[in-house]
Length: 338
Image (tube, rainbow, N blue to C red; front, side, top):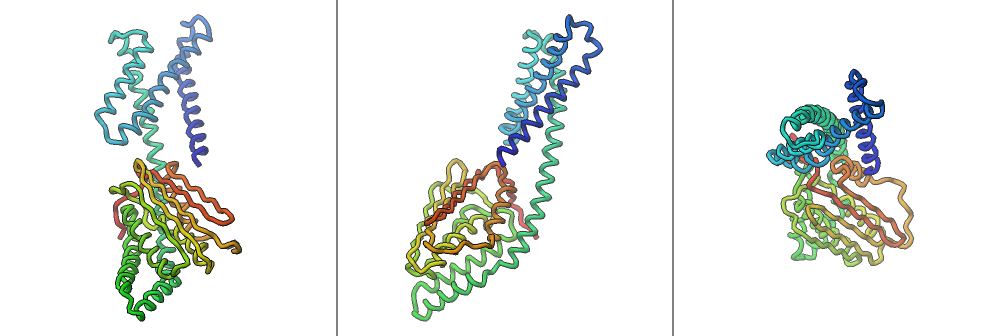
């Protein structure tokens, strides 16, 4: 996806350069006789195009993402004007204002035109992605309402709690509370675009505690958290499908001793989520694609385009999932639907 996006960006900018070069040559066609040769005329037109596109590229790929989008408006304006002045000085081969001003206002006009085209295109892309996101959200909500309460999971969880209650185990109240928290989280998060990352992690912890009781001593679960979760946000129920998959195709599918290792690390606002589970030696491959894993792939591509990496390595004895997400560039909202 990253390569496809990069190729698309390169082609657009090559086309933009050629368009600007053609327009410059056409605008100077009436004065072509003032040039010694046709070659010098074309060099003149291409040099103007190079300066114009150079300022536009610096603006689009450096100034806008690193200053304007981060709301450093004053610094953005200073650097933009500074870059135009430098370009005008180089083009005019002089530092005197009369010579610089001749090109300064011309480059200011062309840069403004380029910015208008840039923001128009970006607005169209954002609108298209929002439409797709809303459509996906509706699909997810319908699927979520149908599978919101997993009967199999709920049945086994209640069986575990019932068994412990009959034994008058002191753990029973805690397990009831954990199940209550799971159900509350599922119900409340379904109405939100995003939740705090620490809430998603707590949900996974409660889920694993219940599953550990159900699977008894035949499954060893390791859950490590490294780094400060801060106030980072993530789409709800985005990570749990990987954990469910590890239990379903690992510990739940065998009576032998199994292991599940989960690690969560935060480095420079980037989430690194890793799940490794052991696999039974003889298990038939499931022909049904899990709704959870398919949806999580689609949601990752939509919410974190070009800013996430997902690697799944299905080995003979283990199943590895490595997910990394840059949570500083997500399109998540804090709003609540309904």
